[in-house]
Each structure stands twice: as C-alpha cells, then as structure tokens.
Length: 182
Image (tube, rainbow, N blue to C red; front, side, top):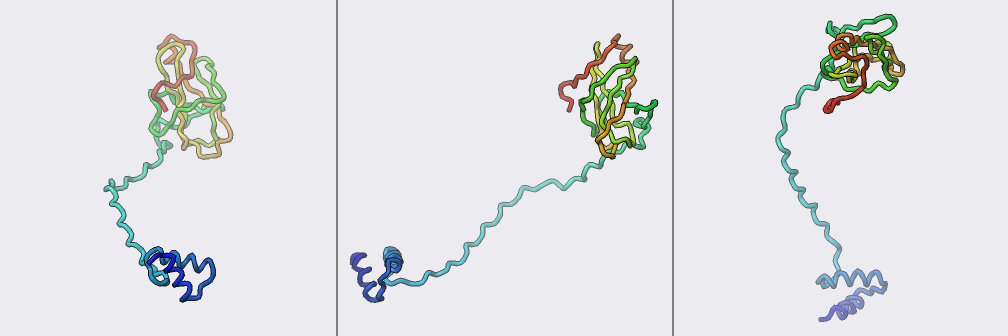
C-alpha cells in the first residue's frame, strides 16, 4: 500500500484536517507506524564511566615563605639615612632579579640606589651580585617578603663595593643581568 493512501485512510478515520495533524501523521507513517501513537520516553542512557586518572604523587607540603629576619648574615643595618644591602655571589633562594627604575650611582666605593620599600624592612632584602670586569657588571636581587608594608615609597640602599672595585681595577659599575638569571 502506498504511503499517501495510508495518509488518506488515516485522515478519513480520525477526522484530522489541519496541516500540523497531517505532518505529524505523515511522520509516524513514514517511520512505519500504522497508526499514530504517543511518543514513549526512553530511559536515559547509562553514563559512561569516567576514565581513570593516572596515579598522582602524594601532595607535597607547600613551600614555606623564607624569613631571614633571624639570620645574622641578613641582619638589617643602616648607615645614616640609608639601609645597607649585601654583596653576594648569587641571588638568595626566593629572591628575584630586579631592575632599579630610579637609576644608580657610584659614590666613592659605595653603590647607591633608591629602591621600592614601605619603610619597615625586617632584614636586608636587597642584594647585588657582581661580575668580573671593568666596568663591573651588577644586578640587584629582591626578596619581596623583607618589607611587608605598602611598597609605594622608596628607600635609599647602599652597597659597599670597595673590594670588588680594587680586585677588578675598576672605577665604574654597569647594570647588566647575566644570561640565565631570572
């Protein structure tokens, strides 16, 4: 039996006259149903099991912030109205290389810089690392936790370079961050 004949017979038997009813009936008939039936709700498909996560290492303890306030090597010293910074071979653990934005100057054997600070440092949080040569290349290391006050101000920091100037027969310094230092 042809589909249009089925439709005609179904329309005649149910008295359906609207286009919407015809389309619905056509959909059921085209799908092989002899008489229209109410749609049956199928059960939701079973969710797939989540893939197993790869085994992870046990959580490690968070690194504790470095507090050098009780370390005598980093004891905070002043010279007049300036804080005295350290001259080191490399940046201390937890410190980052820092570019002095307000410049620097060599006064005698002292390197002077205005560096950001809130005015309440608890240890010498700025240090310089020197390289060989003339002029002596240097960069600044900064430990953010050394001064927990607002960092909107600046403080004068001085670094004694007399021994390095003599050893390198230098009379000047030059800011330069070596390759590989962050």
